[in-house]
Image (cartoon, rainbow, N blue to C red; front, side, top):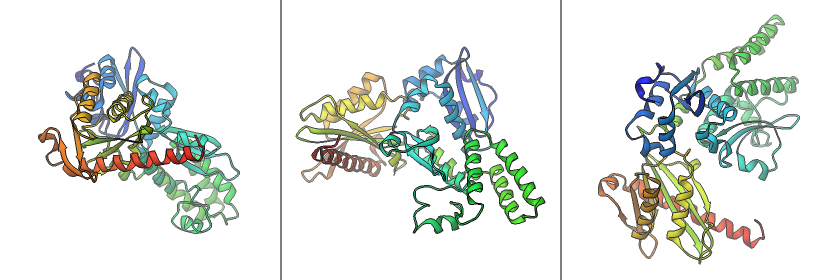
Length: 402
């Protein structure tokens, strides 16, 4: 498919789908459908999104889209459609246990929690229903902050004795001392579920009907609360969410991934990936790797294994630069992996002195210039994160835990 074959795309939020002969290949969300879909037809698509996305765009013969009233609703619609259709290029997003879900607990007074999929079983959580998965933790948390202003709910923090009143006063949790609390809270959760199912219009109709009934009974204060809620739904303030979404705009960002390996004489060998976008650490993007291919010290081999596993995740955004901890050997190992998978990404290595302090940065001067601080930062974060992960595993092994 070529850009000239695209339908007329609006400059508004929504969800887009690439199709081949009617079969959905990929589903994505956008702050601007026009800008986002057009970006798939740039000359640097291979470097920015990887070979799988390039292949998907090449195979596609049609693009469909759905406009939404807000970026927030685009985020939710995208998750629902991926879950329903399971497109090939999105499949790993659905299955990846590091991604997030929003869950409503099975309790008389349910809590609404945002957790990683892998933590659900680990923490013994029982959910009545879940929504997601959502790949970007910072974005879904920001979305939940917006939703909570409209539909106050309880979570693990708002039910604590020393925080309960604070959450109620700032409008993030309902007043449990109200005689109508249970009924009102149940309706609130029902409306939140409908909203997450993409049925905002149904929610508005329900609230309008309830508001009119309260007004007839001259319960004007309660009716006014619903009036404000309806207004908020029709005018969702998601400026902060747009800023979070901007992190994913490759035309305006520079993503650096840092890699480091940690072990004790080859024992409990682990690797990590850290991410710095425009000189800011993206903690929700950090990833851990248990090194499986070696039973003795082999930093270069471990780095190779980690990079191959990382780039098997074609749904992850490709970096603009890779930073490895080490010297020429680590740099060459990373470049060899990138050459094998056909990815053109510059690699730099941070060389350390005897006190493990940075003393040199190896790589192309044009790539390094002006980014020295970000390179050192992502490397320091990788070193810190890998040591912590290694210590955690050693501690679990000492205690006899898996």
